[in-house]
Image (cartoon, rainbow, N blue to C red; front, side):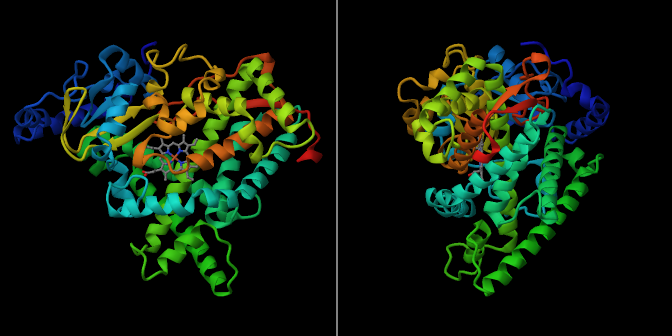
Length: 514
Ligand code: HEM
């Protein structure tokens, strides 16, 4: 793997002087993290590469975190301690270590840590996806799995997915023979699916309010990411926050709060007139009004939950579909196999439906293989509740543990030709059952695992199968000058493509079919 050309060391160089002064102060006042650690640690923590004073391992970390962490693991082992400035984490990078974290010590690793951005969150304490393991998280998870995203609700939502998919196909058909920003089209679609399912409003087209919800959520994500990177620079950096991102985040969250507050009010007024829509907000309001509910939800809890769903559900699903289409366009033989399968099973003159998916093994294999190579959430973050032994090393309580599922799912010990796009590998040995039954013994983890695993996986699969299948069925795809699409991974924590997915659709099915 090539060494990172641009790395965090360069990005933070101007701040090192300040950090030096801060560390000197800690040292003089006897609070040096390394001295303190030496005093309290009798057992051996996971090893790490040689570290520099103050910055620790920051100089070893490139801008693209999953590949950079993968390269470190290849050199130094599957369980590593990394010190990134003032923040320490343990990095797990193979299936057997992941199994220890997600299975053997599952309960111990069932919390997530708080990040630097949390102090600016107006929903602090109401957050679900990043909540510590406890009564509130347990209640919200049960509610999500048994009602909000239950199989019965997904069946009701299938109509919304179909409707938004048809809008997407019509919009793409509008670019027939011209360049199409397929990535933006897919993100608009997933936003609309989540917006309609959550509060019966669309994010593009008719409603300006909903369009703003979409913009605000994107800004929140961006600012929270920047603030959390600031974690590495220590508590002094958080207090000073030179970038002003903290107050910006408060402003954006307050705007989201106002928008959703108005949508809640509309729902409550319609509730009085008994015009029920039965979206997620209706269910949440029903629990809010239930005096016998196990936990009394506040309106802040409801707004925070909706924000979580937007953040966790939109870009992830869109990113996965972008990678799937890019792989298929770059692999004409796989594209043809999929087109032939759809033509045989569905027929040439009707649009693929969700009910066709059980009869389309190659389509399911394409989606599985895409998620293996390009997990939209490549770094899963947990926190230890107590000291525990993993691979004979001690992970202390309250340690942040990152499982690099990108590395796990490209590990040559676990996968043959791990960097190749080979959907056929998921046609062998009842792959679907193996995935459902135990994540291929922790070699396959795109949705995480255990009690903290993704509750939106079935919804995401439903959207991805129906949409990728239809895009292959309805269009041929060309790329500028017959080139291959650029498959580089973008920078940061996420799993997005580095470049926008621009390609040329050529309609082969009359829009009359959709
Ligand atoms: C391809 C699409 C998606 C991928 C790859 C994905 C992946 C993940 C991963 C890796 C986690 C962390 C799991 C762990 O810690 O073990 C997660 C958590 C979560 N996801 Fe997804 N996700 C996707 C779509 C969705 C959708 C559509 C929704 C909801 C509409 C959703 C809602 C959530 C929530 C609420 C959590 C936090 C669960 C908890 O902490 O208990 N995700 N997702």
